[in-house]
Length: 265
Image 1 (cartoon, helix red, strand yellow):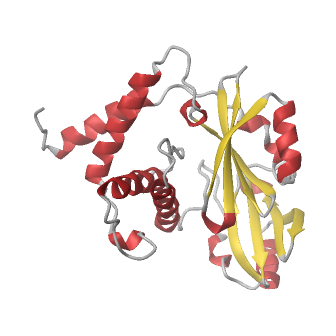
Image 2 (cartoon, one colour):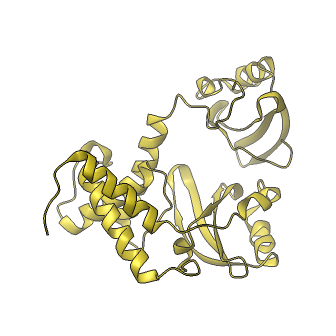
């Protein structure tokens, strides 16, 4: 097989393969926002009542856990993020993440295209050893490839796809997610034409001071709950369509992010 060395050609190939490997996706998560904030056990019952079936799950960073749920009637797959026993987010993902294919698409062809796309992207955007927890690459070449695929998936915010069920992919994905958060830490987390209010500067701040600052910036505390020593509060700012979730532990802001939607926002 001839190797095309022109960077523009390679990027074009990646774009074409990405389009071929990404089928149209149903959008079901937007109808499930009322489940945000529920206990995981209650959310599980709600999802089952609405026709979803649990497929699989994996652990993420900061003590979070992710589970994939499939709705056969709508042929839709959603990923549910849980932290400290509470549902944080629900997002639509590809049907492949639930072990299914979209109607009119070949599972084998899509899988080949996806692997080829990952290989090309990996060649262009290899991770550095510093992205490993111990600062060293794996000695095993196969494990290193799995880690790299996971890292690239995490960096580019594509769905978790650990089809070989390896720890290396899982670790790489977590590292990629952390790198992506670092790369985009300046961003408010939502787009559009409305001016957004800064909030990421409150990460690590004293909780009392953060509450006061959010109020000064036009946010209103609309909901909250506690899990052990950790407190979660929801802050709404309708003027800018921002909906924040702030996590407080040991009197300081452990995490603050725009979650987009919440029943109280």
